[in-house]
View 1 (tube, rainbow, N blue to C red):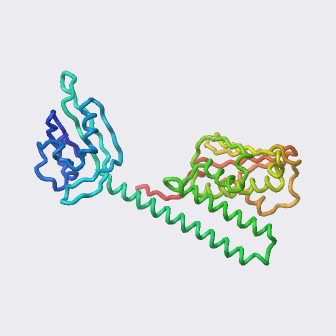
View 2: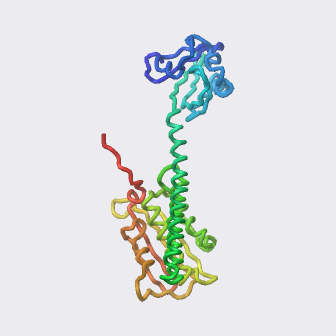
Length: 317
C-alpha cells in the first residue's frame, strides 16, 4: 500500500485506525493529523454515506462504486466531490476480517465536465430544433405561392424527419443513436406505428447514419401511405434489421417489406423521393428495390463500422 502510486488507505481493527500512502494525501487536502486517526474521524462529514460501505467491508463484502457523490470539508469549506473507489476486506490468518483497504480516485473534474457537456448538448439540440422551425416557417412563406401544396408538405415532412433524427442523437450519451429509436421516431408522428412491425437487435449508429436513415425511413413510410401497403386499411409493413457478413466485413442489413396493399408497379419517372431512397443508409447507395405486385420491398446495406462512425478524428499520439 505504501509503495503504490495509486491513492490508497488502510483501515485496521475495530478502532478503524487509518494509514495511507503519499498519493492519498491529495484526497485528504488540508485535513490535519490524519495518520493513525480513526477513519470515521477522518471523514466525519461523509460518514453517513461511507459508514455503511465500511460496515460491508468489515462483514467480508467488497464494494466498488463509480462516480460516488460526497460532500466533504478538506480545505476549510464544504464542497461537492465525486469519487470512484473500492473498499475491500483484509483477512487475518484465521480468516477473520482484520480491516479493509481503500483504493480511491477522485473524479470530480470528470463528472462536472460530463454534466456541463450534457447541459450544452441539450441547449445545442434546442437551438437546432428552433433552427428547423425557423427554416420551415421561412419555406412556408417563401413557397406558398410558388409550389403546389403537396410539394410544400413534402418539404416540411422531410425537414421534420431531420429534426426527429437530431432528437434521437440528443437522447444518447454521445453523438450516436439506436436504430430502433430512429425508426420509431419517424413512424410515430406519421400515425402508422401500430401498422408497422419492427424487429432487430440493438444497434447503435452514428450521426451521419442517423440522418440518412431518418430521411430514408420517412420516404419509404410516406410512399407506403400514398401508394403502397399503408394507403388502405388492411396493408402492413415489416422492417427488420440485423448484422451480417458480406465478404469479410460486418454489414448492417435493413429490410422493408410491404403486404396487403394495392398491386404494385414500378414508377414511370424518378422523383426526388425515389432519389432519397436510392441514397440508402449512408447516402452512398447500396439499396435493392423490388416492385413485386404483392408488395414493394427493399434491402438497404451499409458497412457496420462506417454507419457507427461518429465522425470524430483521433490522434495517433
